[in-house]
Length: 323
Image (cartoon, rainbow, N blue to C red; front, side):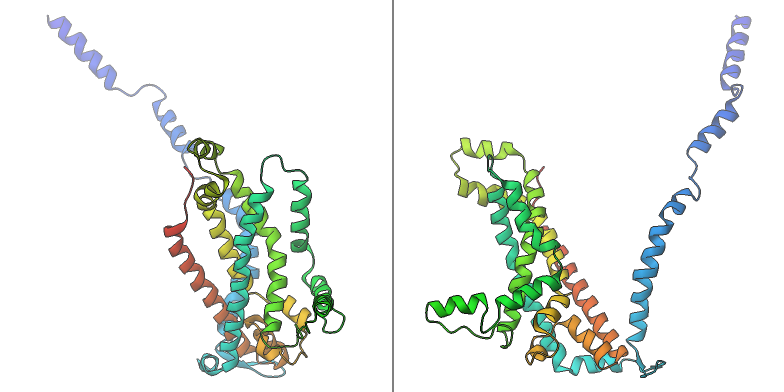
């Protein structure tokens, strides 16, 4: 009996003793789970440096310059919130905000139009669908300045296509790009026409992600094409629609090149049609008020950030994702 107890005790001690080489195995396991050192940071360094140098640093500079006043030959003077006080009292700023919001609102109308076109072009068995998509997308990749030159001819008062067509039916068309509000709507129509192709590409990708079983099940239940479009296509396209709404709003508040090329800086309606970015350009390079222009730039950033935040908050109520 005593021998059995001694053997059992020695077995327990052997089990509790560390195995030969166990320390090395533990160190190897720790080494495998140790951080990778500086290699990941080294790979993302070029991108981080580019973002910091070309985005974050100019942003910080603009915020600082918005509290200063610059001389004609350079040199800045700290003025505090003087530029922002002037910003709140300048009627041109309020008008530019309204113009930009009107332009952006017309661009947003292009999203439901693109939903309809995308659904039509994604019908099974449609011939030449790729050609149609290419035709819709071409205006988006064309240069805005070149497109503006073409549309200036279309909008021309005397020999433009629109007014010439209206004269055939006895209607005298207005001066589209020389009349207040008409000029803003004319610019917005061009922007809407250019954006539909990009919207259709995004929405077509969203349509590919809708399970076809949903349409088959709804067809068995007796749902027609219209009901399927309202109850399946549109709700499950809301993630793509949300993305386009955010991108369209940001693009709308960046209106400058097409407005500048289509109307021209000497156009008599430009003071009533100018956007926030054009107001920034005119203050910085026309009046040489770089501090005030920086304040306008900060205002644009705050408006875009605020509306984007609101859109992200509201998307929880109307955006639906397919399981």
